[in-house]
Image 1: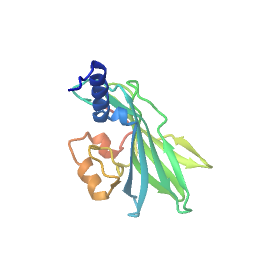
Image 2: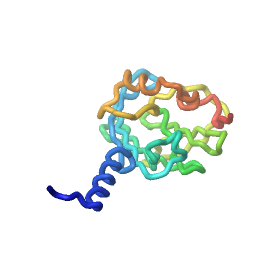
Image 3: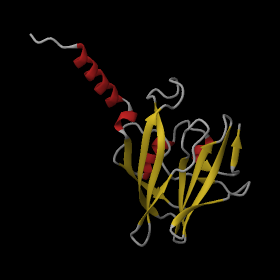
Image 4: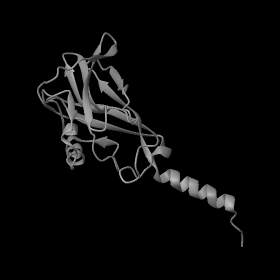
Length: 188
């Protein structure tokens, strides 16, 4: 009978732990159908890179958090434009992409970022002249429902349909995730 060394047990435990924690997987990728304001459906590619950290065990049992998010947005010219998170909250979480629109031939991405323990701020990015530019939002603007997946990502399929996204986003999430607006700063 062969003896199992303490080192072998340690290796097995580390590998098992990494298999469970998304931070050891490195990133998560999927494609997603997005319904634009005009009713047209486009398919975007999504990627989330993870890192260690992310708050209390009670609300984040994996011990990991997103480091950045990237969205590949197809244009009518068969070119794909990539948007990547640029802002990080005071607690080091990246902004959350919530809404994509195509304004003429320019992609637009709306995000949400915690700016304090009680306040979040929406941002708007427009692809213009070959680069992403943050466009200032007015203090108040019309509400727009979100069209990107922000909800449950457990057992995520490689392609997320509109129906699957509605199911995953339909939980008890806060209103600031389910819509963009009516004000750029939401506190309370």
